[in-house]
Amino acid sequence: MLSHLSLPQIKPGDWFTLFAGMAGVAFLAATLWQGGAADKAVIRSGGKIFREASLATNQTIDVPGPLGVTHIAITDRRVRVASDPSPRQYCVRQGWIAQAGEIAICLPNQVSVELRGRQRNYDSLNY
Image 1: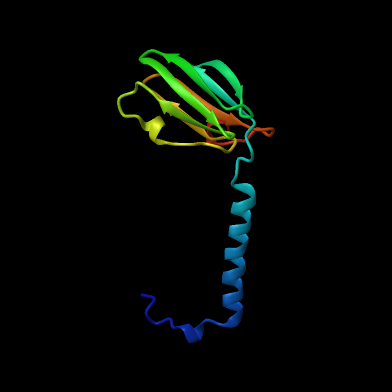
Image 2: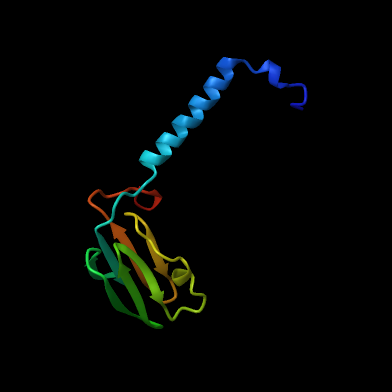
């Protein structure tokens, strides 16, 4: 269908528009699609806040859940679920989270870790 188009039909202004559009998208993605730096981790167990922990201190937090204890590690301003008694280990495999707005959720054990920064980010969940 587009086989009749060839590169000689594309004018310099078309190339400029194409590259300007790509540069604009890259700029907006780099500046607006980030959660920013996180300063604390909000840890929930059973839907209730279990603890708010600062990311400035390296620590391990044990969070009780219906299946057992979930171990959360905070190291170098990053957070990860180090171990969890859930059968599929999705939250453990998620790895490190470091940006405000990122969340690690261990559903079977009803434990979650959310990173928060100075600014509250909005997403489809709190729209």
